[in-house]
Length: 265
Image (tube, rainbow, N blue to C red; front, top):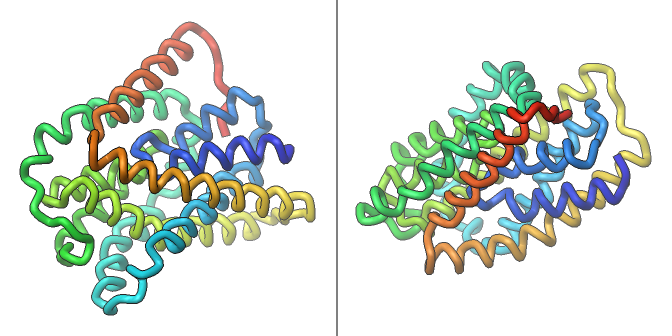
């Protein structure tokens, strides 16, 4: 992977990690279009650069992290389902990562849900701050997050939908999704790194340079994306993201069924 390719993927990661459009799905599509050769480092890179994006949450919401232990316990409770699902289904997820059809269908289905979520769940929202999330609601949101193991679903979309189903306002659901991303992405990266070395692979000096650049770019882009997303969300809601997912999903399906092949990660 070249530095230019790494920067492009990092920009995509920073833009899409916290939007309900699937960062993994977009990186799979971008990697295919750029013809990036699939190997274990590329797979590790696409997970590791999420740390850069996640650090932007800590910078933007750093005051929120100096709270009672209750706040951290709730995040841990929400994180538990992902731990279990990751251990049980990690091999299956790696298989799904090689299926562009899965990405396309997940984008399409998730888009339809987002188009109508404000209409069906927006009026039921009562909880307007992340600290007001109970342990039961946190666990329920964590269950929704497990859906994001399907490439193209979007971790952000899954947890936001889960939050709104538990009567969180769309802004609060989005913010709780941001906070939950921190243990989830740290855990995913740690597991990927462990698997990477356990399988006998190593990271070269050039690979380290690519990882550093990718994380820095993802961090900067994500800082801007989060602020813009929250502002937009408060004014417009999720419908535009739903339609975007539907359009991308349909284009991808048309591309696949027209006989073109996509080499995915």
